[in-house]
Length: 170
Image (cartoon, rainbow, N blue to C red; front, top):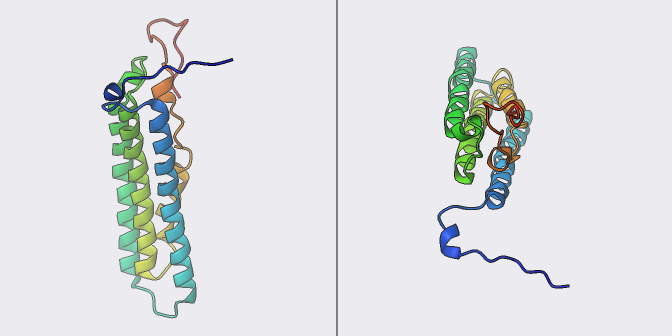
């Protein structure tokens, strides 16, 4: 039995990528952003394990640690706020455009990835694993559950004024 596949006009899809394509791109980006800090962590620990050089001063290490924590405290909540602005359609019961989904998730992923990288660079620069590894671990733990599910661009929450069709967004 033959099946027909509807062909879309390529000129109409060039301006707006499909949800499936954006989700595939999001997974590739997410794994790349997950693997980069992990490899840097392995290199840093390996380098510090074989290093006999003296560590940086405790004041420098403390300042780097506090700077990393300040970044986490300021930039990551700002990224969540910005994503909620980009996902405004989702909170009003509609789906988010695929391009906006990728922009919103990238905002959070890049903020968390940068926080992890700053913490790991602090380990490498200071010559000590702790306390600079702590902000990197916090960023990693927060980054993991934000894998690309695509829910916001494929499932609407329904009308928020109708209790029968409204689904609480996760």
